[in-house]
Amino acid sequence: MNQITLDASVSNKLNEFTVPIELCDPSGRVLGRFVPMIDPSEWEAVSPAAGEAELDRREQGNEERYSTAEVLAYLEKR
Image (cartoon, rainbow, N blue to C red):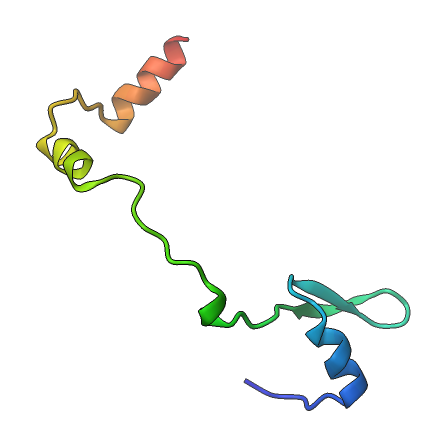
């Protein structure tokens, strides 16, 4: 990937953003998008929504299951 070194003014402006933005020329034409880097230390740990007991229950497969074709046929009847 090619790199462009920005001057301090532009770099400081971009450092203010925490969400993706569009970069435009003076006429308003979009040149590209800037997606800020996220520091992984700012991420919050995610845990599964289901506990071990729920995962085990799901794995047993006691519920009736339907194929895609069966679901589509059911939906077409409605």
